[in-house]
Amino acid sequence: MRRCALILASLFAVCVIAAMAVPTPAIADDSAVVLIYQRVGEAKRHPLESVTRVQFDAHLAHLKRGGFTVMNLRDIVAALAAKKALPERTVAITFDNAFKSIYRDAWPKLKAASFPFSIFVATDAIDAGDPDVLTWDELRTLAQAGIAIESRGASNRPLWRLKAADQRHDIAKGQARINTEIGKAPLLFAYPSGEQNAALRQAVRELGFDAAFVLHSGPVFAGEDRYALPRFELNARYGSIERFQTIVEVLPFPVQSLVPKEAILTTPRPHISFTIDKALGALDALACYVTRQKRTEYTLTITREITVELARAFVPGHDNRVNCTLPGPDGRVRWLGLQYVVP
Image (cartoon, rainbow, N blue to C red; front, side, top):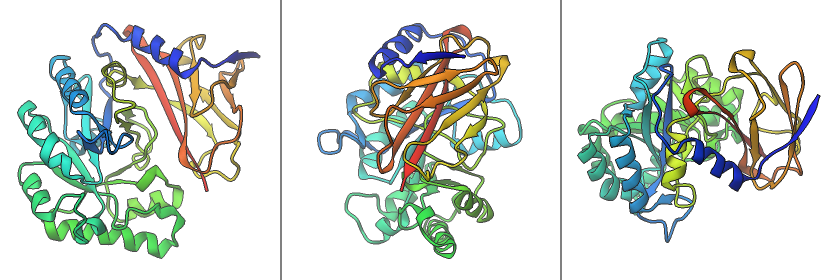
């Protein structure tokens, strides 16, 4: 058994960025990176929700010149479900919450780059005429231009906290409103705040969605649960071009026997463990980072089981993350993201 100290977040970022400084050829065709934006150009008022216009321009320029394939998220999900190969270095662009800046600032630039994207909307805010979000007329214009309008339900509340019947009512209401206003039913779902459990995943599946997305980071890849797929969030704080160049290159980091199995915790200081397949090679450079914890430790056993020991308990809410990375082929990084909710 060997006990290893985890690197600090800043050091981790420097190491990964250095490894990714030179673009490398893609080596995987069964995975893709899904990006989340909310607002563009509103970082002064909403720094946790918005990237700056300069950041957004730099992101699109990197995708344009870097040999990436930007695909519609529905097509990526369909390919993974059918076990069909994706183009190398595939990326999808998504927006959450249908804020006005999508129409005003993001769409013209994405249209100029010929990049498709998807918007996950919560319908109650639109029906209420919230001045901060898009109108149905604006969403119809986007849909007619080929933009996929997907669902976050009606109320935009963490649905797992509701009774089963209320969960299904909220999800179905959002489906029906989008179908009525856009003329096409949503195929994909995003859990508000990323909060979900097995019962909610099953409800989303039974209501006819092809896949659903959480808020932990990492690439989507064949073989994982299609109703708990990861995405990378981007905002002014975490929107630097260096970080962007890193995340759009990441490779899958599949693990087995993950504990705890559910993101909704029964204790704020859980025992976290998982097993890494031998096919992924040596684990000497494995590194994990825990939100708001400068230092923690993990244990590596001869059976390749990893146990993460938290320095202190997670905080109440959904912003509790564990991110683990492992160097992969051609200088790229394998990325495992986990999100936990303390009720």
